[in-house]
Length: 377
Ligand SMILES: Cc1cc2nc3c(=O)[nH]c(=O)nc-3n(C[C@H](O)[C@H](O)[C@H](O)COP(=O)(O)OP(=O)(O)OC[C@H]3O[C@@H](n4cnc5c(N)ncnc54)[C@H](O)[C@@H]3O)c2cc1C
Image (cartoon, rainbow, N blue to C red; front, side):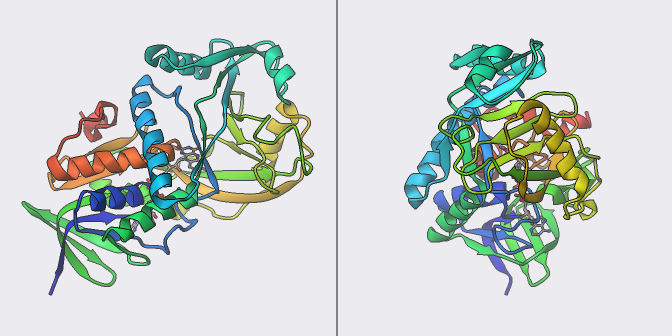
């Protein structure tokens, strides 16, 4: 007998775990299918921490979603009794009136958010950074970081605790949709459901290939650097999260919160790949060279020894805005992907939107930026 669910969630990473939880919370019979062991390091939701911030340089329309995301992360902490989000200011640094600082100020102005403008000299007097006079900073207190693997685990555990079924190491081979029903075939079984939610991360490049959304995959590297232990300068009570728009970058980093030290990475800047099978999961010497050159120029006090590195993947759209929509050809299928290297912080609100779309085909959240047909019409 084919087992039947209200909703099947294809891919239980950052967005899929949040969707499983939200659908189960609404009383739906949910099946989550994940090709790898749960909370793995072969997708986009690993690497210890993810930045969350509010004055969003990418577009002011993200701000209401961010406010909701903060609320939902704190609600998940309360429900599970786990610490998931640590508050920490975020310092955006870029050329005077450049794209990054202008974007932060535009969101702050539109939504009445508190930010502080800093000159290059202010930055150097308050933090161990070195930037020339042509740079400026915008500091925001309403920011922090999420413990990414703990967040995925919390959503999965919370979903299972209220009845969701989540299967690790079960790969979806294909799915079909007919009016009123979807049929999902895995490497173990066939399942039926009224609705399908596709949250396949980088694998959307193949799973949703027929939609011709121009998604690409980008290898990204996270590195940690020793700062001398214990280091006053780089602890989270005196060193901010930072995003620095500099030539060869942008680069971003987080304070030293454990013995691995300062976490620093380049944002984007690597070749666009057609799908996740092309990603090299090994670290290469050049990975360190790129980040070290940034640190040597702009964070000269760091002591330099690399302590850890991890490879991860971005899935990019051409405009770097997400895709969240009802499938253009199948009303019973909902899709979310192309999170373009800045999606994790939104996971619980994406879960809420996907649950709305799966239940009624509409949502009160504003998702006009994320429509699937914007690249094809
Ligand atoms: C290095 C790095 C740093 C980042 N920093 C930030 C940050 O600071 N702040 C922020 O907000 N965002 C950040 N991001 C982006 C964010 O992490 C991603 O946007 C988000 O994790 C994407 O989640 P996802 O659910 O789409 O993908 P994933 O978490 O990868 O989940 C997709 C899942 O689908 C599964 N799957 C795929 N195909 C199948 C199949 N056929 N059958 C079964 N399962 C399948 C995969 O195995 C995977 O588990 C960063 C990303 C990276 C890589």
